[in-house]
Length: 549
Image (cartoon, rainbow, N blue to C red; front, top):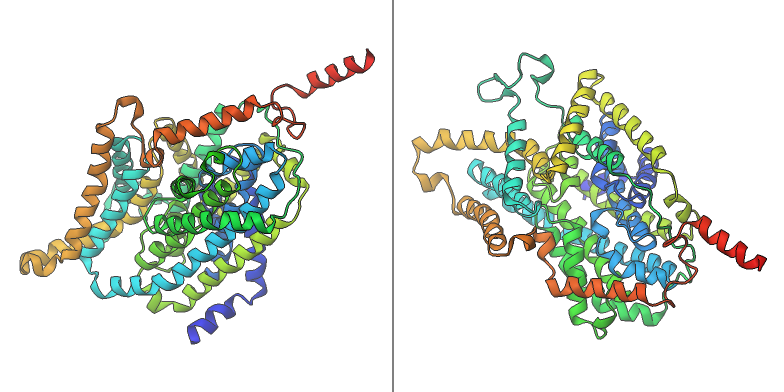
């Protein structure tokens, strides 16, 4: 009871509330700008939160995480461009609804079901986190912890890249980066090249800001093209009626359950859950032919599923110390810097912090819902903001945030170097997720492996290595081998990652056919769409010429 009181009491601090409001604004803006991911925003904000108290820092980072999940639906619906990967499936029906003059309805429904999904996932976290952490604390020793880390890295490798070899390469790179600095067992220096700045290892904040922030910034600078598609200007009515709520109920229930399950799988994020949830809702719908053409069930299903992954990701992160997604990987790094070790011991050492985390997620969700339901006329103007201004601001904050972590120019140099490396990896389609995971968990795996190897010569093998460790190692191997076998059996031009193959080829073909039919129906392309096919100046000239005649 004291932990609950202390955890909730921490949120009554005015500073925590202010930090949550800051995180709310940042998260919503980050989600609304396509290409600026939640991982990038949390990594950037982490550099500014290192001097804060843990609850204050978590208030910023978790609120950004939640709010970005609301903001990314805005460009997905109004511009047909996902704000973050989690809103990919939202474009299937959200943009067609906007073309039909129902953008406001799509935005409102998206916000409501996203809140439902997140709140349900927080309940899952509250129910499962303690039993999972207790199980891990009672049964997990060095061999099991090593196997768990290997399993987590293997899962991310297996589903984060179209090429299994590239995923494995990314994991190996991450593990190698984790070996830089002093080896705790012998206190020997490794790969420091005589540089004092590397004795303590690579700066985690510099690495993640470089890989996720600078790399994305450089990529956008090099590939930017003027976008002639303008946001939908007519939003229509906002509030769903009782019939529409009832129509969406089954889709929300089914896709929500899928999202909760997918969220518990390390590295399986909202994009995968959204695609699976959309497809499952379509299969049980009474009107499957409307999916892809502006179905309100499609929007509800995709957004509920992708949002419901947040609590599952939080569960594996806090209870096991294995990041549920790339955002949680950044969160673990921040908590370690604060002197907090996510995992089973967190629930015994800092139960009040677990309560605070749960409360922050709930309050952040409610605040984001309120902000999303406000009929903001500035949404369209926000999407029209020139990208160069955005890029300049991001670069400045990346440099300041990185420098603030150590007050050292060498840290900024590390960030820029990893930014260039991240750009090269991005062009080579080598995922950054396994690299970050290897950097964080590599030292933990190495330490537990060293302990296990020291014990093995003195005791029987099966008294040291339990069936749990063997099962986890077997699952780790299977998570890498099975996707490789599945992809190898496909034709070369159809091989892809799990995220690409969760839907059948027929489903993707039907989605494309639905979008084509939308474009071919003149009645759908009304004046609610500005400047999609022609420059605005040409329309004005045509109108003027017509008026003169």
